[in-house]
Image 1: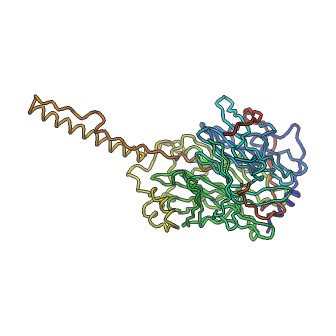
Image 2: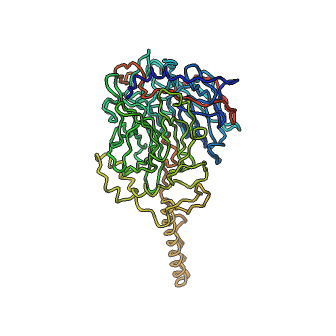
Image 3: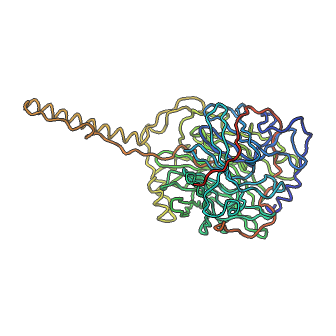
Length: 580
């Protein structure tokens, strides 16, 4: 058993030293030299996936105290072309020191503007430093051949005071982006050597720059209102502005109370339009409670939405550290869990970054798959069995793949999951409240039309898939067909009248009068929202805690030297933006 408060002391003893090679460590070592990548965050923009922050270890490079080094670049991978984890080209965008590189930071994606925001975080090893500048940084993508981007400092609209004065250092919160706003729930701060779990949440409006701190005393996800090492996911299918789901994690208050994992038996979610918290019990093969896992979401057929949960660790003091490799799916609107990939089928992994890529693939990047114990064979010091820390899971097939396929067919729920995408299963749901039922009633699943089970595209093996006609297209076709029938009938009547009374020429109805015009429908359903893979006066601070709420001694280290595949990216010096 190990208390999170002991983690700082353990970190100071987790030493792994090797002889230094000539030159310095690389941000993109060769596949053979790579060991581990951990503590960063991922996001998808403009057909590229980005990895920012964290630590990396590689063969031959370690400091006197740690077997890993800070990741001093923003990495990215092209998602428009196929690749394998062994041979992928990883772009390296160098960062100036002013931007800073932290672990357990928070990343938001403004999909429409093609911009990323990074805020919060701190040193991977708690003893490396305590005070972190509270700055919000924006990364803007560019279309040049090197896929370079630009970083600039953003001054949020706070009303009074500034970000540094009003908002304490916040790390390891649950970060998530909607179409318009970035959120961070929970987390902890390290100020003056004291670790303080935080309650409430923060929101940042991408368009207006407005920064809000919400004390949120009614947050139901934990008894204390604290939330650490959790995952938040936005499902745009439901509600007027989508719903934000809080998935797992842990709560901890002080050194006298052991941390407690949050279960998945009841799922808590926020309606951002109303700022209203709601909860719903789940059924099925409910996953074990865990922290440091990842979640992604993807829209399915007929108004359904599936949330994928991968990996994580059980960090409760009463149990030995258990790393997990299972993949579970929560089917909405039925709130039914399915175990899609079994725990015994793979190596456990936690603190990985995840995102939906190529329509139906979950990309896992980085993470640790070894217990962080006080041994040289643990953490960053031992190589990742995933080449370059990359792994690809086909969410439709329910299998790990050896290559990324940008031309894969659109997502279709695995048969073990789609079995719950029926009206019969939906009718079995015992709703927690009328408000919850009303949110999901509009998404009542209907059986798909015969022959509509597949969408055009190719599977991972390159074989063509069948075609699937969208509901909107079917509706449009039916209405259009009726319009054509109407025109034919009108024309026959006209001919008949003309033959009987040539002197009376009756005109056909004006063009468009009989045309069927189906109501256009749109929704965010590309699966890229929900990555993974998000408070001042409004912030509640719960008694200072000495130490760090890590369950493990993060003695994980990163990989060795190797030449980067591609070096690109231009970082600009931060500039002050005018508050809106």
